[in-house]
Image 1 (cartoon, rainbow, N blue to C red):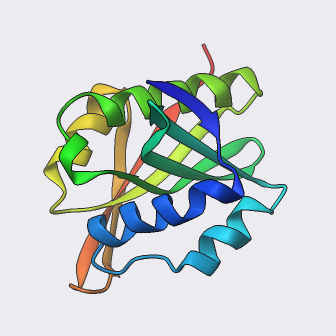
Image 2: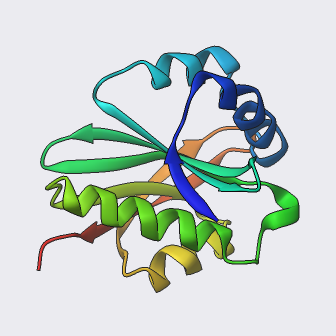
Length: 146
């Protein structure tokens, strides 16, 4: 597996992964817009030329916020998400970001477990943050300094 920045040719695969993974998926246009914003960062997991997952970060110094991350359903539980996020966190640290923030559905135990294993701490929650279905968000953060 390798990690690389997204290109326009990846967007159909990314949108497919998003559509199979999320109850309220981003549109293809949203991904196109994100790809061309200077303050955003997109990172991909690739194996043999196939996009396996993606992560979208909002880069507003000194923090980076994980806005969206998904892995193909057939690849979950195989270390793909961990590989993706470890690579992204290393890249963000090398770029001088101090902290990564994220929100995750309170019912997403697998993601919460992964984030915790990567060192993220729970900071609180936002009641009824998500729609489709209505659900609380768990707020988490990870310091990259030190």
